[in-house]
Length: 479
Image (cartoon, rainbow, N blue to C red):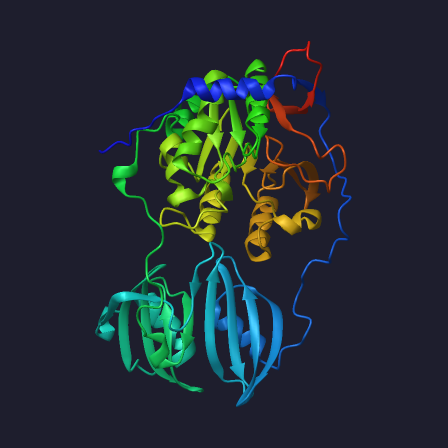
């Protein structure tokens, strides 16, 4: 395997870090957990069902076509040549916009996944990716799903297509609105529908999702898979251990280095970082910004969460430091389960959000009697005070429902650069994003702090406290 020649000016970097710290020392101060304060702009009520009622029957028909979800918006539209209604349906995979004409006949369906990928008429098929196939080659789930749109009538045209989101099956047939073509996944999920000619246009997207050239990979310095194995071996021999949670270490080397040094002094078994480790996600940042303090003040395993700032070149820098399998994984032992999920990445190596929730559901079911801790980067918008900088509602709602279903002990997130806590549907949620990124002001003086959180597990009981870093005098040790 080809390796990148990595030039790391360690001495210069650490010298610069030391210079930056001169006259600006940090000392750590413990504080009790909990900060429910919110002092930001007036909170808007959460979005519920549609405020404009849908014409009779359209709501149920939209849900029947696209599957499970909830209608969050009904928008009457008018343009030269006609009127129609657009119903927005949010589900566990993403957002559908379903259009019906004035007579209630389906006009078009567009889909946008939680990972940000659009599937719409004329924009789906990669150049040269369309080929006609006989109806017999259509997967059974697709044939069954298409009956909701075409009834028992056999399709008049069938294609298999390579699309940016993967293989899609396009079926053309007669509906109550005339001829339509619909696109399905191999499992029978409807993705788009519309004018037959527009649907099968090629070249709407010029390139595939970002991917990594295997030759760009290097041997990971801190492989997560190995760290998980070592942690689980240790947990198999003990019921007492310490873990630490922090987040958003980007953009301020002196604070990040101070946090890492302070953490090392508290000797955790492992530390979890809730994402945004670096500012732009480049390979060089991970190697020259994030790596040196970890090597200088290590001695414990580090378990990362991928954040939106870590996504440079399909997570090349992130995975070059932590290896493959470092975006969605679990750690189990000593009566505890830790689940790490990825609600940020969109490249070819990412796992769809609904699939991640299925994995988490299975893991937590298998560990029914364990204490459960879940780590994400973007917090849930179900907590109103975080909604300004959080997961979208269609992504957040099924996540929070799953956390409540399994009575998760604690959910940790980053993304918001502050310390803030909330209880939602019986589950404790904490935002911890005080590892160096610019602080948010909306959560009071107790929230706008550089900090990390310490938890001690002993005999099935968990006790925790926070540690904030404050500027000390020149005589005090510089953390």
